[in-house]
Structures are given as C-alpha cells and as structure tokens.
Length: 324
Image 1 (cartoon, rainbow, N blue to C red):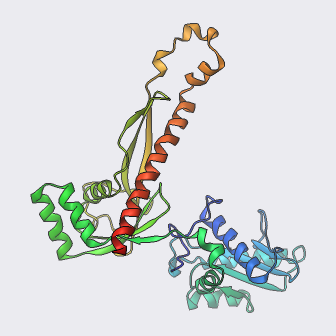
Image 2 (image 1 turned 180 degrees about the horizontal axis):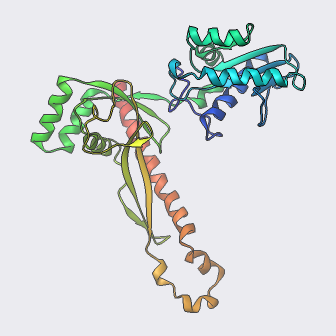
Image 3 (image 1 turned 60 degrees about the vertical axis):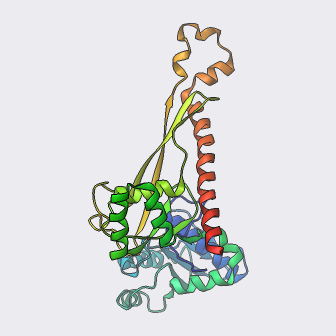
C-alpha cells in the first residue's frame, strides 16, 4: 500500500482539522516507535512544542502541508516555532528538538532551519511512511483505499449516459488526450483514480459520476413527513466549478484531486398539517413531531444510509470487474 500523508487519502476521524490530525497521527506513531505511552500532545499555547516526551526530554514540532507538496512547506512558521521552543526551554526542558513533517523539505528550507537550530532532527515524509509499513495494522484506519476506475468503464458509462452524437464526441476527446485525476466524495471513504479528457466539461464529468454511483433521487421519508434530495457539484481547490467550463479551463490536470460534492437538501411536508391553535392539547410526542429540524435529522439519517449503500454497491461491482 502507498501511504499518502495528505487529504483525501489520509484521515484521522477524531479530528476535523488537518493540522490536528497530523499531530495526533505523529503522537500515535512515536509512542509505538518508542514503545511507550508517555509522549503526549500539549494544549495551546504550545510555545513551539506540539508533543513532548518527558523521560527523554524530547520536544516535537508537527508541521503539516495539506497539499502534500514539498514546495508548500512554510519554513517561516517552522522557524517561529523553534524560537518559541527556545524561549519555553526553562519551563519545558528539552535536549532534542524534532521537526515532524509530512513532506520532504527542500535543501534551502533545511539550511534555514539549521541556521536557527544546528542540531535539529528532521523527520520528513519518508520517515513516517517507513513507520506506517512497520505498524501497518495500527495505521490502516488512517488511510482511504485508492480504487482505479478503468477507461473502458468510462466509455461504457458515456455510451449509456449521453445521446449518440455527443457520446461519440466525448469518446473522441478521451481517445485524443487523457490523464488521470483523483476523485473523492464528501460522503464516502474511498478514493478513486479516474481517466478523463481535458476537453470534458465540468457538467460532463458530473453527469458521468451520477451514472457511476447511482445515488438515490429525491424522495419523501413517510415516517417523518420530510422530502429529502441531493444537489451535486464538482469542487476543486476549495471552489465549486462552473458547469460550462472545460476541465482544462478549470485548471484540472493530471493528478488533480477533485471532490464529487453532494449536499443533502430537505423540505418539510408535514408541518402544515399541525394546527397551532390547539397546541396546548398536544402530547409530548406530537410536539416532538412538530419540530421539523428533528424530523429532518432522522429523515436525512435514513437517506444517508441509502447513499452509503449505493457507494458500497459501486465499489463491489468495481472490485468484481477488476478481479476477473
């Protein structure tokens, strides 16, 4: 397995912020490596020390790069942390200072760090990937599985999802030039590698994905009197993309990570049936049913289960076709 130490491949389900997730992950692996549970996370203000190992007086600073690109490593912030840790040394004594980062930093960045702290220990991407191999069973839950959607699956879907003339155009685009992108859904735990053409419209790709996953259409959850549905979009670099733009115009290229973003929308179909004039005669259960937010939450839970089943079915079919 390839351990990509950045989203959407890397996850720590207990944390909502990537920087916190990286810090928690480092803490877990360092404790495993040192065969201890004494290494702990420090609460803000950390004073340049995110993790601390009292027995060995080792201070750790965790610097994560969400893009996973070495060039995005912020050496200025790392230097600020080193200076803060030096100031905090009387209260948090340390003999060794370790920088934990999920990328391989450049030689220029390393030189600047060593100017500030010559004996700094740098633990880059390769170090953590080696620990992941060493502690496979412990990190399995921190990485999403990458599945490959083959080109012939794209072609089959295009044949089914579009009119003949336009499907021929799309297949010609794919045959002329293609590259692979990384696809992730905000409602699923798998990541996909999928071939596309740069001339595909964002709307074309969205239509293909709808046919792929066959997520449930709008329906009323009768038990709750709530109508639930989905809105769909393509998100790249944190922005919803304009449907009429080509992937090339959107800046999407080989290796780009895009999100198939689906949003749950709901409408109350039952509220009008209640008569506010007689609310004083209602039971507690009836009052509960009057609250549209609570009913919507229950309805969306039911609908979300249907979404999960649709994704699971797609994965099972994909795995089945690849094992033949």
